[in-house]
Image (cartoon, rainbow over all chains, first blue to last red; front, top):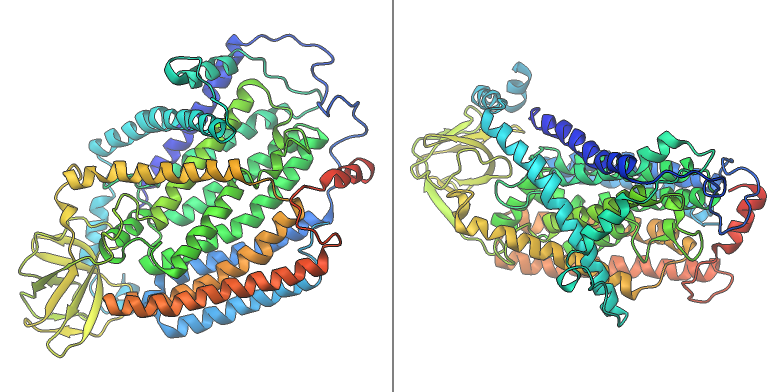
Length: 118
Length: 508
């Protein structure tokens, strides 16, 4: 029912207001005294070496790719689970084939060490 | 329209007409929404969360043989307000060179994510802020905003520790999201719906708590563990591991901005516990309430042909709700002994309008029996048995929150490589296997609408299967740890010191 999403939209506004309200109070009440040392990065008191905005290790992308793969699988699984009662045995076989194909992928990634954190 | 008729062989006009009727947003609904928005989301939930924080401090103190906060007000009960005032009058420091817009956006996003999740939780009968037909899918999608906010916070701070915490956080959150969303699949399968209201109703009136079955137990624990990881709490609090990376992604946050992260985290804890209660612990229903639920029987007033009709005439009808939302099923047994289940859309007079989502060939004469799970509590939302559901629901939620505190006080932090391999090598295979064990439970218990004996058979069959699956998955992992771990010692202490060294010399 579409009208329910009106509530979600209103809630989005309320949540933003709820989060922004205290920040507005802070802007009005809290002290603002700038100093050079205060706006340094806090890295345990050690002077920062180099920039932080660097390239990331490839390992993270492997996890991200696996995540996308399995998330899409879930998108297929949810409607399957909802309508399974009306579909019966054949739907189960189809889903087994689909999941086994993905599991082969997971096993391959596992065997090649993509899941090993380095 | 014609397409639907071809598909189902039934006339869907009354259903669509009814749908159009419900599409109106009237004054009463606006008033209810306003009440939810301003009393619920501005008042009750933040208040609950403020006292959950206090409870955590008190309970953690008891676990560590301390007293905990007891200075502000009686028993320290005014502590949350003192904390709020302190956070308000503290300066918000943004480090130079940081992206200040994203820096302020990140904590706001955390709160938005937590609030949006709470929108679909049914706290009692008629007490769900909204009942989305695809509630669970909505929930999965809005709760993954949290990963975004963690990354934005870490990246915008322009601090190596923040960035490291954020990268870890995102890797952890996306890894544990897979077992989290897969562990709820048995619930969807058994209730045949994504609406959380309908999931609670199925448990309360038809099935009993979904926890009371071997795949349900496994699913519940998978959901609980991955949820703890999703909200970054100990033992999975690596994104903010203070012994390694200062405070992780919120190292550069101070004052109220940090406070918002804190509030968001605890709101998420509350939301996650509400979700687990709704999905596996039957919402506000008592244990075993629907497990051995009685059935009410009715007689058909006129012959019924499922391939031609979508409405069914009954003799006794007062038990059926006027707008049963979703998840309300009846079974018709004709004189030949054939049994068929139908989804009820709504009631008009003493006619039930059925929802046809598949072609059905089924005829019933007036000697047929119509049976439905007895639903005593359709009297009114404010009926005593329905009002009792609210304290029962919150008792379960607070128990789960206490379990989370308990786990935090007991277990040491997991090592980062162990954390990731636990998600992918243990949780994901278990969650996938659990789906199939859940289908077996469905075939034995739910599809034939079986009674006590079929439940006993199903307990034995799926119990053996679940135990076998758990044993196999853990065995494979034990061998793979032995093969991969050069140190071969069961330590939980993080070794990320060297990865930090690598980060400063060659990038993250």
